[in-house]
Image 1: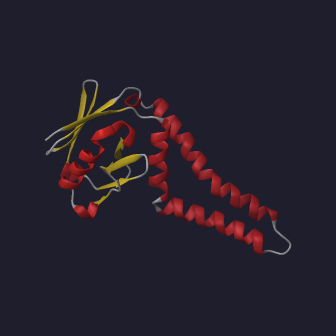
Image 2: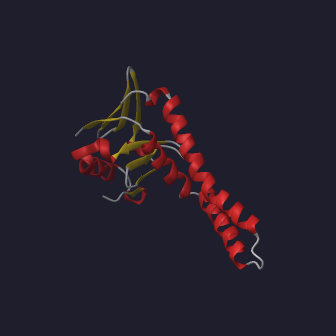
Image 3: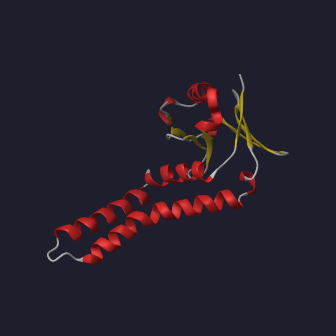
Length: 161
C-alpha cells in the first residue's frame, strides 16, 4: 500500500513544529518556569520589585518570539521549502521527493511519531523530523495515521486524531 501527498511548508506549520519541539524539552520547560518564578517574585516582594516583572515577561515571551523569527527565516531561506515536497509512505518507509532529489527512511529508523493540532510529526533523529501538516493531508489523514501506527512500535506513536 502507498500513500502519496504534497506538502507546502509555511511559517505557521514550521512554527507549530518548533513550539512543540521546544516546549516538550527541558530548555523550553525550564525557560518558562524561570519566567513564571520571576513574575511570582514580583507579586510576593514588598515593595514590588519591578525588575522581576520586567525580566519575567522578557523570559516568557523571548522564546516564542525567537522561534517565530527562526521559523520564518528557515522557511524563507531553505531551498527545500520553496517548492512542494512530495511524500510517499509505503510498507518500506517514507520517501521525500524534491525535484530530482529523493531521500528515503525505513520505518525502523523512525524514532517517534507525535501530533499537534496542525501537524503530524515523525522524528527521524533527535532534532530532525518530517512534518505532515493536517491541512495538506486532507482526507488522507486517517490513512496516514494508520500507516504510521501499523509500521512503528506502538510505544513510539503518540498521535491524536
